[in-house]
Image 1 (cartoon, helix red, strand yellow):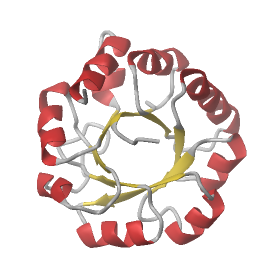
Image 2 (spheres, rainbow, N blue to C red):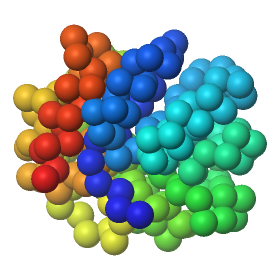
Image 3 (cartoon, rainbow, N blue to C red):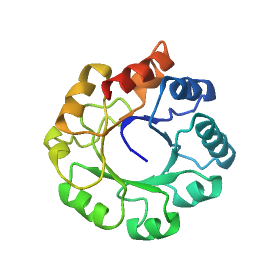
Length: 192
């Protein structure tokens, strides 16, 4: 599986219609992200992803990912041990947030992460206080795909891809677009 393209992160609260529109437009990966565990909702999102052939990753919760049959999990610094997560997920996809820290990223790859997320790359409406990650991180050769997150829009996406980002994790610019499917398609074209 190639991890390259638009990485849609579900808005909170999720709207299945909006998520389906994004999937229709063409996303490479979909992250189910919630503050509170919702097994029924997670199952529905995974089923929706399956219909479109898009892997669904559960944020912060390896056990929920396993319970609902997701393709994998994404963990931040405080979301559990990556080595233990790798063991629990088996061949499932494991992503790791490494913020602006290259050494943390190297350790995450050694622990078995399949991709690394750096960010916030720009000011983010979702996490306004997030640490900023320099674009130079995307020139790091870590042997896994690199994901940019935070404040990404169509206007700044090209510079991230040029810097070396394989995945662009987007919430606001995708799910608040007037035509979500069209916006997803516009991101998809940036990678062709």
